[in-house]
Image (cartoon, rainbow, N blue to C red; front, side, top):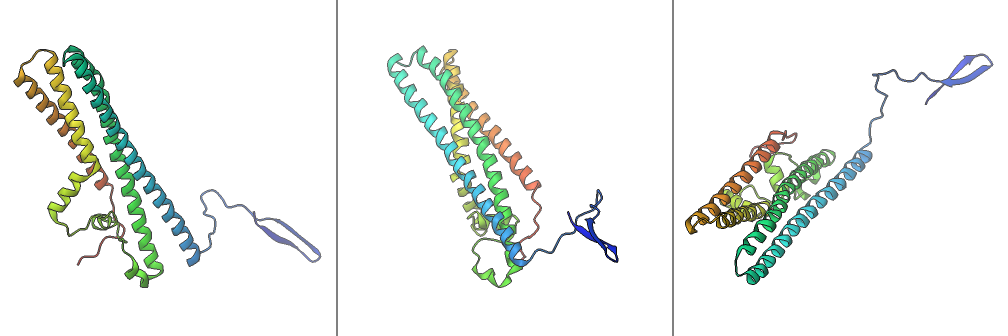
Length: 246
């Protein structure tokens, strides 16, 4: 609260200045370059920490899924030896494999959310680099990562060179953790469908067909979900510092 001096002659005093009315913005002082740099640095470190947490969660969730899958395969092998691949084996498989598939689907969804979180962090850090260059344009030659928040700039910061070509991008997508989890989930869905068909008494051809159908349906559903999430993320991308042409 501020005070004003009032009165005349020998009657001097202080009384509170009138408070700002509703809807009126309080007067703000212009931030100095050092203050701007401190604010930007704080936000930059916050985004780095947040991106690190997203990476750690992705690795831990994928590791948990692979550990669960490995344990389920070992358990199925032990039950198969004890039951000689009889009804006990098929019943046990129909109980444990859907649980593993649920963990795999949840992992895939969470990996997508973590990737979107990382995308937001990269966009924020690229914009902060653009602010650094506005404060000190002569430092541009020292920056390795991009200061542009469009798709080419995001790719540079995430370690995906823009000149890699279509084959390089396809290889990066295949080697990504979400793709690996998606394929494993599809294989699990195919195995569950095949075991269910085997239990109801279908022949070899019917069992094989059910497995292939389960794999394809699971793969298409996961791909549809992923493409929808990617399209939604791209629709919300509005670059403020696009990469200059040429």
